[in-house]
Length: 336
Image (tube, rainbow, N blue to C red; front, side, top):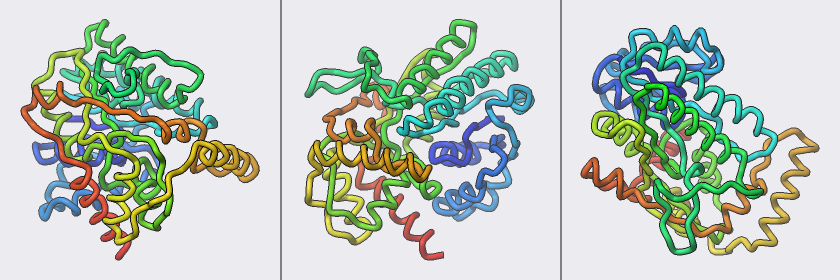
């Protein structure tokens, strides 16, 4: 029996599918979560979705509820911890710390107490250190937080420290650090926000660069690494390093829109996040751009997934294939 936390998220639903292909799987969901997204993701990929869905044992449990979490882990061999809050809004800092850090500590403690054979923790490139311009970041890049480090990055790094604390106490665990994950998921969450934005069309693109990875590769790599990796190892999961101009262009093209051709200038991004902060303060809505995302949009960065690919003997999908997949899903959802 496998257990997946955050089972209705992009990573969680894809991990759930990979687990269901192998046998029974227990999935955690919070009260109010839309579990129908899992069914939609399964049907997007599999003609036998109805059969695979019967492999899921749904358990209502919040990772902040220690008793419910402990009970959910009884009889479980492996845990895939994908639950997290992803936000770059300063107002979500406390919530991210509770879920991403305290929640991970609870998962680690419950895994130790239940004798879990292995935990796979989903971290992020946000917890990876920096390198000089032109040098790809790796699992060993030195972490050095400063005033520009986002609350999300701080929470994901602190969550990793909880996993390493568990390892020191006897837990068998590995960590994965995916970059921007492209794949079917709930509208308005994680990278689906960007997908929906580009589906509507835009003329503008940020000048920086980042990296993307297909959600299918993340899930498949996680299950493979659980079988092959040494405890305590950490793996970057990267499909392709890409400029935002090309990424936005691929997304626009997938939806039949013109490629964005106007680069956002630093002053435009600076003005944008300040106006969004004011709008958020006045209306209580979540800002579309924050100081952290504005800084990220200007940054040139790249990552290396050589460690994971060498161990698994695979090459992860490129951005175009990942975008074609998520565009097909989004288009089909919009047709219903």
